[in-house]
Image (tube, rainbow, N blue to C red):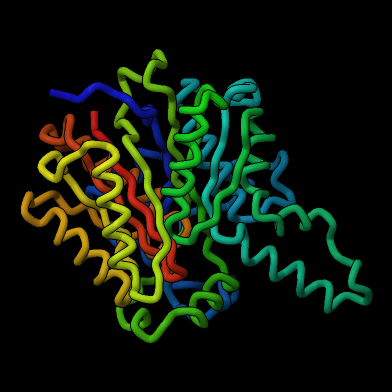
Amino acid sequence: MVAAVRGPVISGWSAVSPYGIGRHAFVEGLRSGRSTAVELDPAEWSGPGERACLVPGFVLREVLGRKGTRSMDRVTGLAVTAVDRLLREVTDGDPGPASGGDDVALVLGTNTGSARSIMDHTRDTFLQEKPFYVDPSQFPNTVMNCASGQCAIRYGLRGPNATVAAGRASGLQALHYGRRLLTSGRAGSVLVGAVEEHSAARAWLEHHTRGEDERADAVVLGEGCAVLRLVPADAPDAAAGLAEVVLVESGVAGPDGPAPALTRCVERALRRSGVTPAEVWAVSPSAPAGTAGVAERGVLEALFGAVEPRWVPHPEPIGDTSAAAAAFQVVAVLATAEDAPDASGKVAVITSVDRDGAVGCALLRLR
């Protein structure tokens, strides 16, 4: 029997990923397991890598039109497109500005926003004749919350608007933030997601910051955005929802590595929610490269190995999506559950471990 819904409900989702644009493209790609890595054109994508997982055919003006996209950067375009596709499902057509409202909030996870925009703008202050001879239209792209702000402006989302930065755990932190907005009554519905772009700037940052243990099994870089719609448990469309967000917990790893912190995080989530290991249908690790990924897998095997859950890994064929990784884990779980009747009423455990110490855990009760 399905337990009574207590937390907010995920009523819909969409994604822009290397599988394509939209929810159906992601589901089809996930089921096929096909790789999306492509050879990079060095004239367009200068950087240390020769391959990457890019959103196919993603040209801003072709996807979103010319209006309002002249100075839009890639990370903002990915977020705006994902929100657009989700709102089209909600409104059964063109979302337009009227699809928002005073009670619709948006919480978006990221790392720094657009590393490319920040570096390009900074470079111009050195290369131009005077430091202030820069393109003012590009300045908004250097602000971390540019993408969330542009989504709100374009679609009339006048509720709370927030950007959360926590590395690979950004998606779970954004989910936690959105859950709190609903449970505190500060919003009638919340769009929650996370976004990451591919660029030469990001590739160089990854190249120089990866540890020796990460280089051996690191996957190629990917990009994309995944967005969920959260509604209160008593909302009219909650009954047809996909999953209840039971609880989200977070922590910080110390000198002894991520394993103790993640163990405490997951155990605290189980204890506070009253969920037992026997109720767990699936686990989804973030699977970062190196020793952190080994530690994460070891924690989950120790806690849930006896119940033999389904393992729903981060969809490696779309590459390392960094800040968007946890959001893609969530939608991968939801997509996998569509084909699994035995998932109904069960719980999925989604964890995340970031190299900078952030750990997170979310419990979803599937509908």
